[in-house]
Image (cartoon, rainbow, N blue to C red; front, side, top):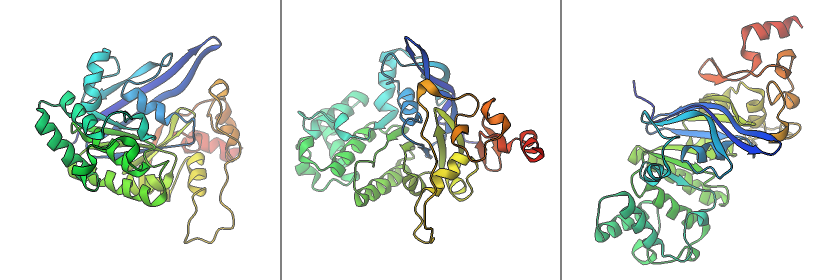
Length: 330
């Protein structure tokens, strides 16, 4: 049986404040297999991006990993010294951010940035690094790469800049790429191109991807499995087609109901009442229960853990036999 490339166990990310410690990611566990695309979806503030930055060791202070562990091919990486983590970041784990200008230095040509990244993470010379940079630009679909390699970031459109960032992420042939909202700022046609590019890169290189987004359409097109996050926790995780077809958690059902379906004549989309709770006001029990149409007695008092149900794992009292029986009796 294939071993997980990345294993996250009981991850907790917290922010100490004068009023106490705020928990932004709470007891999150998942695996990513080699070559797999794992989608992570949820509303803004769910903890998606923070989970990604915790994996690559880029949590801004005073934030910190308060508990849990992260392993890459069995090696624990969450407690490494900064210098060792820098060697892993870029070489074994690549990162694609929502705004490509956060990854590109505006005063350096893109070719220089690619060559520098290749030289930093591989054992090669300048001429070979430039050839590799040209090959990467070709692979990600930059037209006329020989002419564009000496251009500056501002000379590229948003979609082309995102392709350059993908080339940077692939420069050292990483085993895992974390893509944080890589298509959010792009128009629909360019989104489709970037999604197709990500899928092809996974297929051709065997690279695993954690795709962080709030767009279930992107997840449906790209991911193999999906983890649905709410208020810092995973509430459901499973094979993407099963989660979309038969969602279990009431929050996931609400997300699926909010997606327009061209082939279905629905007068109104489903709306989830209320908003995501602030970190200072996460309710006891299941954090979703104030917004949940199916909440009952245990939901406000006890927090459910992820448990298997069919082909997915779900954190909901509705899928605990004893609790479900109690609801029926009530």
